[in-house]
Structures are given as structure tokens and as C-alpha cells.
Image (tube, rainbow, N blue to C red; front, side):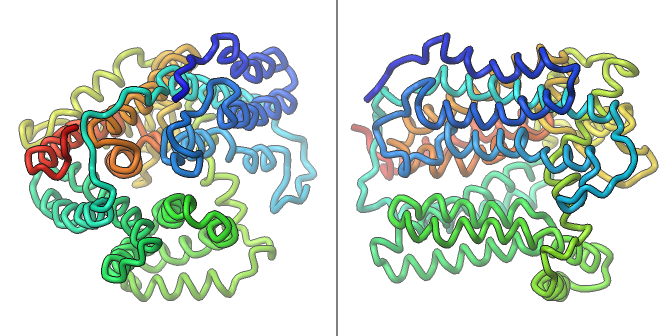
Length: 469
């Protein structure tokens, strides 16, 4: 296996787009485009193995859940590449047509370019952290017989789901419910991908039932992300065995979801969240509205989704406008609050509400009015900026990438390789790292997910399911 460390000069190349965009900051349109395209260059240089060779213990198709691939593509792709529609909106475009006859707001354009530069810097730092620690050379002391993997994965799905229900009923331990719910979904989807090529009819039917149950839950959640993740993860797991089928079905399916989900979600929320209809009725109404709409007819909900909800740059801009001008940088305060959030409420009944702590900085920045019931929590990179500015973006995003990679390597050592380690446990317990939420939520979840990972490993070894070499 290749163990070559990434040359420093090649890692430095990842920062050239950010540096060039910063040098040309006086031309915000050009600066934005360099920073935005810079993320695509970072993807190209890292995913092709130019900066550091991709681990060769598996084919690329067989290791897509490792941080360098899926975590980078989802996290950095969502963070750094989705703002192009907002940028077009700033320039006066709507539904891809120039409609504004007024002058472009230069201040807004300057802030948009500035935030995109932070995104580019954050992307480079994040993937640098991954590359520095990307080594799967150390052999695991444990193994799982391949002929038992399919049944074990299905067992994980079956056991994790009731475990999530159990934890949600215990005050102070509800965070574990989210962990095991996510683990159940990943296990069920992975088990389905295993059962189909093995032609295990019983396993396949059970896993299909689990998958559609999870998909229905996502469909009635009122959120777009779980629906997209449900389709994406199944496609990733099936890809090694059915490359052409996945490319021909799942890629168009994901594109269709992005076209129709804005309308679906808007109608679903209007009916279900207002109490005017049950979840089932709201789902049917939303499906009818989405399927009968024409994505090319200029539906404002679609453009609004692309420009203002697909990307979080509008919120980031509001934070950069207030900090440090009106609100000082927070320094270590957000990290200290994250340390408080780690303590389970069952041990600290009077612990301050994590949601309230996070929303306080949202109110202080003027992102949301205190009288509003809207929840608008900052993204991870925004908290990095609020803590120490541009330096915080670089250092904290570097650490973020390093932590994701270190956990993936540790999981593979504990669980005997990629399938149980990264594909199941890392992707199931640490799925929050795909998105990067506020410090308090993410650090708390990662800490307790790591504890859960160690506990699951202990259970599997004591029960002799996971065997020591």
C-alpha cells in the first residue's frame, strides 16, 4: 500500500486560488469566480491523487465513503460550490435570466466575494487536514468473516432502530437517539447493497422494507437533506457492483430531486406544519404539486431555494457585516460553550439550552430578530470565522479535516477494515461531519459518537462477533 506523505509544496498549491482571489479583491466579480472555481481545482487535485496518492488497498469505487471522497464532496461541495446562484442573484439574475435594471449593490457583491474567499480557504484547509492524516497502512487486529458481513449489517439495522427509540424516551440522552437512528439507516442501506448481489432473498426483502421506511420518514420530515442523503447513500453503496446502473439511474434521480424538492417541501410545510393536514395528506398534496409543476416555468420557490436556501452564504455575509464591526470576535467562548454542551443533561438538569446559546450570537449579529420564531444556526465555518476571523477559518478547518480522517482510520482499525469501519460506523455515527453544524452541536455529537464507537467495538469483541487476529 502506498504510504507516501503529501509533499508540502503540493499542499501549498491548494491555497493558490484563495491567495489569488485575495490579491484581486478590488474586483469582486473576478475575485469571487477565482475563489469559486478554486474549489473545483481543489477537488481535481485531491481526488485524482495529485497532491497525495489515493489509498490503494481498495479501488476508488470501493472506498467512496472515506473522508477524502464523500465527506469532502458533500461538506466542501455544499459549503463552497452552491453559492453560485446567490452570486447570480446579486448580479441581478433570476431563473438564469438578467432581470434587474438597477445597479448592482457593490457592498453586497464585495461581501459575497469575501465570504467565497473564506469558503475557498476553508476548503483548502479542510482537505489539507484529511491529506496529512490519510494513511490506512496499519493493519487491524480484528477481522470479520466476509460470509457473515451481510447478516451482521442487517443485525445492526434491526438492533440500532429500537435502540434509537429507547434513547429518545430517556430524558437527557436523546442525542444518542440520533446516532443510532443514523446508524440504523446506514446499516440497512449497506445491508441492502450487500444482499442484492448475493441474491439473499430474505435479507433483500427485509432491507428493502427498512430502506423504504427510512425514505418515507425522510419524505415526511419536511427537510430536503434526508431525502437527498437517502438516495445518494444507496447509490454509493451499490456503485462498486453496478457502476453503469448507478450512473444511469441515481445521478438523474438526484438531479430530479434538486428540481422538484423545493416545490415539494414548500407545499408539505404549508400543510403539515400549519396543522391543516396530516403528514400523509401533506405528502400527497406536496407530491401532486411537485409532479404537476414545470421546473422550467420560473417557479419562484425553485430560484429562492437555489439562491437563498441551497447555500448559506447569505447568513455568512450577515455575520461578517457585524463581526468584528459591531460584535467582537468570540475567541475561545464558542469552544467553551461546546465543552458545556458535551455534559449530558441527565447529569446536569439545569444545563443551559444549547439551542439558546447558539441563537444568542445569531440575534447579536442581527441575522434573525429576537421576536421571530425562526431558527437559523450558523454553519461550522461561520463559527470558525466568528472565533478568530480568517486565521480561525484556516486553523479550525484544518483541525476539522484532520479529526474526520483520524476517526475514519481509527474506525477501520477497530472494526477490521473499510466496510464495518468507515462505511458503517464512521458514516453512521459521524454523519454530522458531512454537513458541519454549529460548534456546540458538532463537537458534542462527535465526542459522544466516538464513545459510542468504542462501546460498540467492545460489545462486538466480547461477544466474539468481531474476532481478533
